[in-house]
Image (cartoon, rainbow, N blue to C red; front, side, top):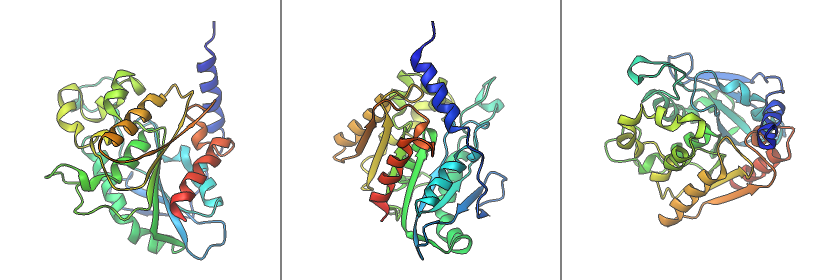
Length: 290
């Protein structure tokens, strides 16, 4: 007998991935590796200066999933009047030192090196490649694994002392909108989210606890950065309990994090321009950006 939840998820994924890739208006490199690039999308609303939305794509930090699958989402945001930066970063592969036979989630430390470098380079890159962008009004968004990276990018100033990614002060962000993020690594592990991707991201079980304090958004609180999570109640890829665990961790740290739970919505409608959930995401971003 078929599982209605699985069927719904498959249909939502098919819809999200049915849109053709949208070419950017400009591309700039923030490093020498082929994956160290940012695609820029100009705002379509005619604003002389528009808020900059930084998009960090998902895909369980695994190599087969690159930024191309969120280009329709980036274009959708541009059509809402935002300037958009769609960031690529190094993702996982079957590296011998990670002791895995299959696709590994992420690279340590390269995935985090790249996100930090991209965020630091973006104001200058946007000024040259997309002058309509206003870096003083920057909002970071990310979906799934990219939601984890978005939360992490906003929390670099609270990283442990000695971290190479630590910032001396909060990053100049208007806020973060994380979409079905892998936001609490312990809860993600309990639910076996993406087949143990968070453990793979940190290099395996033997490294997990030591590295989690440098990577798990639930340990990097409070940030003092306005943060909102958007999550589907019927998400079976990253269940809503992961978002709730992060919100609870924030509350215990003395910080209020917004959580919008959407009924009858799974994992992929949040980045599907054809879905009503995507419009909700754009509104959440607008509330922080404008």
